[in-house]
Length: 253
Ligand code: 13P
Image 1 (cartoon, protein in one colour):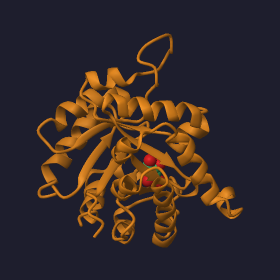
Image 2: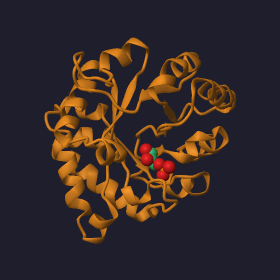
Image 3: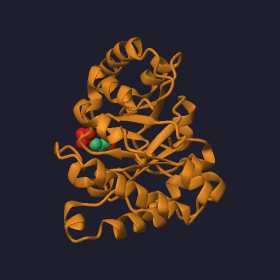
Image 4: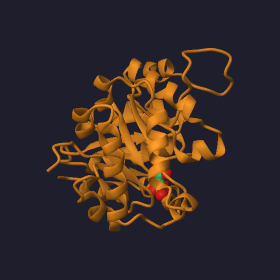
């Protein structure tokens, strides 16, 4: 037993209108029953955040955004700040998802600022890291993870580290149906934890490190049963309330 509370997050990416968000949550919240032992976070697109916050108000589910800008306000067309998210009751934010790094030029420098601002403002950051298939094949997985962790957490004070959630998402496993084996996921996560121990050994033991990449009801139990894997960041399978519930159930300690 690690003593860390499992956390399962639904990254809906660019899916679900307001109506679809409400339908999902009405069905999902009606079914969660005795899942107090698992923390659940829903990350809808910006347009559905308010509706999700409203629907989750009397439930233990937290709502997080999928990105934010590091500035408080300013001439940044199309961007949203931490203050704006807090204003509507959002409690967390996914940062550095590989799709944002790949398609929107998200840099480690910007991420370091975003993580710092999220912590300063009291939003729970879910920081995504992970290697590409070419990097894994070249034996560079640990070097990539070390570089991302060092750069993205640059400036995070040791006393704040435990409030960061990290998601290990190997890019080759995202949306491909190709899941990392529990051994591969656990090995990478243990490596990430060893890197965090360089910042603060106690906090490194407390940080939740999730696995993400083609998590489904059929493979969740073997992944989430591993000592080092503290939960999941789920894409495709989180769009269906029954599938997402089954994954949350599999995270029960
Ligand atoms: P899939 O679960 O669809 O592979 O997506 C994983 C992911 O990117 C979660 O952030």
